[in-house]
Length: 188
Image 1 (cartoon, rainbow, N blue to C red):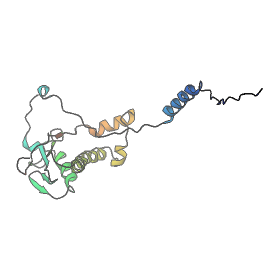
Image 2: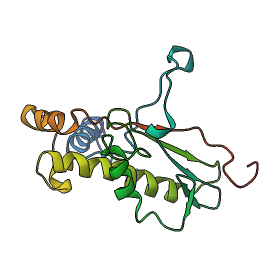
Image 3: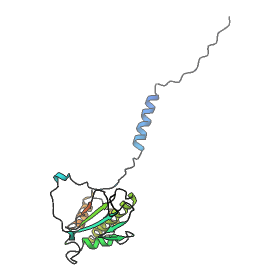
């Protein structure tokens, strides 16, 4: 009698495959670092119906506009670059009744920033960085720090929080970012 050989293929026990996959999933979840994109830290304005109407003197308003061609209009002057913007913002905010054409006080100083719908993001961010940089320089100088040291303070740290509070006391960062629209180039 001849024996009939059956082709038997060896089987792999897959009962523990689910366990292994689950352990790998847990391992990768625990060891993976998730990138936290910070983005822009801007406080959105309250609802228009909830805002009380306030009277603002022209003297306390520093107006910066950018058109669709990324050209700047600062206090009714055309500018080619943003170079002097930081120092002009600082002078405006820290005027304290010295010049009758600049703000009455740091509390009343408002930087009005308006762009066109077609302003490039690069220019928008560049000008906003200059404005915020001016305030950061003011704050750093008030607590005898460099801007880099001031910006590295952690507001969650109680000691750092006190330094930040002391730096910003009496000088709020009043930046009004207007809704984009047509700016000084004819009905955009």
